[in-house]
Image (cartoon, rainbow, N blue to C red; front, side, top):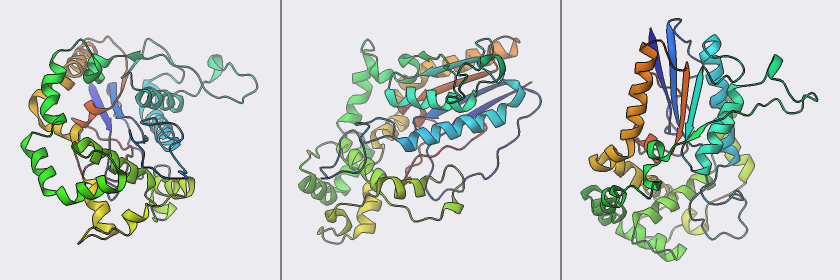
Amino acid sequence: MRIVWLFFVATAATAELPSESVTIDPHTVLVMFGTRHGNRNPEVFLNENPRTWGFEGDTELTSIGKRQAFGLGKEMRKFVGDLVSENYNRSDSKYFSSSANRCQMTLQVALAGLYKPVGWAEWDTSGGLPWSPVPYTIDDPMLRMYAVKECRNNDKVWKPIDDDTLPALAEKKKNNTALLNYIGQETHWNMSSLARAADFADNLIEIVKFLRSETEFHLENIERVFQDLYNASYPKWVSHPTLEGYDEERLVKEALEFAEIHQIACADYEPCRDLMSGVWLKNILNTIADARNGTGPHIVGFASSSTLRIKQTHQDELLFSAFPKII
């Protein structure tokens, strides 16, 4: 009996991505996969006029994120093969998402890629919509504990992160005082929290124009999509900074280090890490136990946000792409 865990997580733009799908072991009885939401908009937008992107709304899944999720679903179908029925069947599958729109939409689109209706499941006789609805469970205690108001420990474990009083956060803020002040001066944002620096990094991630050739990128050519879809460029104060000692390359590089900084801090801070991941870990162990007993589904999928950062905390990243990691 073999159980496979697949994580689809954030990768660095320079990371080498697989060019071929891996083959499932014939003795596999259970596949579990966890994915972070696909590319999303920032929580706060830079004041650009006009802005050529972000029309979905703050923190919402972008068209690029939808492409990523659909590609994930198609790759999952290639991987699981006959282990999971071509059409959705509740007896062999379970899916979970946090309540965040971006996570639910990521899961929905991924499942559209996983389940293309065939035979008895085809319902659109015109053939214009080769899609089948797939149910899933919203479970914030498992996948988004910080959104569970009844959990009294949330404020306690997040306070030193939100206040930037953890040693690593305090040092980061101190070492980047000039850059943070410059960002605040140009955006008119209150930069007292590193959360705003993370918002700035998120804007750069969406604006950035990649120049890599289409043939170099396997998963949906995301870099090229950014360039062609948004037709966006950095504000002048980013491309030609007046901050002493900074050019565009240095400013962007250092600003991107703030991306997901509080989520990464939670992953490194044991009380926060344990609170965010404990229920999920229990679910995983119970699912594995069921598989060993010959019961339960053949595939279980999770769409999360911050919790998945616990599984991967690489900070040198430019965009979120999906790739399989088997453990």
